[in-house]
Structure formats: structure tokens, C-alpha cells
Length: 103
Image 1: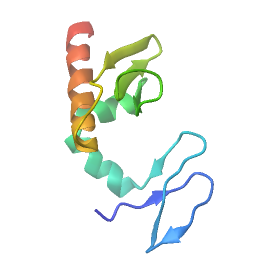
Image 2 (image 1 turned 180 degrees about the vertical axis):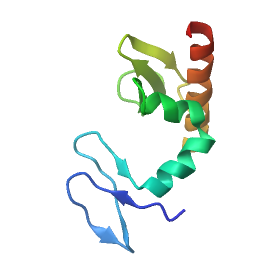
Image 3 (image 1 turned 90 degrees about the horizontal axis):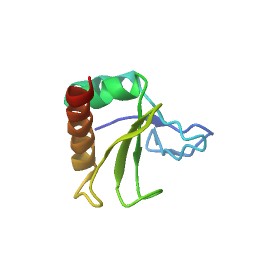
Image 4 (image 1 turned 120 degrees about the vertical axis):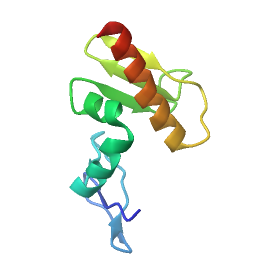
């Protein structure tokens, strides 16, 4: 809680916290929130700071979450989740399973 998010192209201040609507597809967060995220989702954290990326939302398929690398999609989640927390947990586990199988 108290995470500060900086909008990529400006933003309106509200109670000291800026809303995030990145226009370039890049969301910048504070170091504090990064430190909080890494222990909770270690595989996901390593993936996105390495050579992979994730997509969350219903943009291109039936799944709400996908993990990709330069070779394409390596994992696809379910169509619906109860919370963003559930999505992040599924991504973390899905990437870990794929890495275990594909090294």
C-alpha cells in the first residue's frame, strides 16, 4: 500500500499518488514497490527483468494472462481470474513450470 506510480506521459496528482495510464506501454514504479514485488513473485520478477515479458488483459486471445519471450508465447493462463493477485500468482507459477521443463 502507498505505492507511488508515475505516469509515463504526465498525470494528475490525487492525494500524492499519480494515476497510471501509460501511453507507451511502459509502467514505471518506485524502487520501494519493486522490492516488495520481487519476493512475492520471484520467477515473474526475474522473467520481466530478463529476456521475457508478460501481457495481462483480454487483448489478443481467450486468456487473461500470457508470458512471452523472443520465441513467442511460452505460457497462457485461464480466461478469468478472481483478482490481479491470482493472475500474478498464476504467471509466476506458469513461468516457473515452463523454465523447469525447458531450462
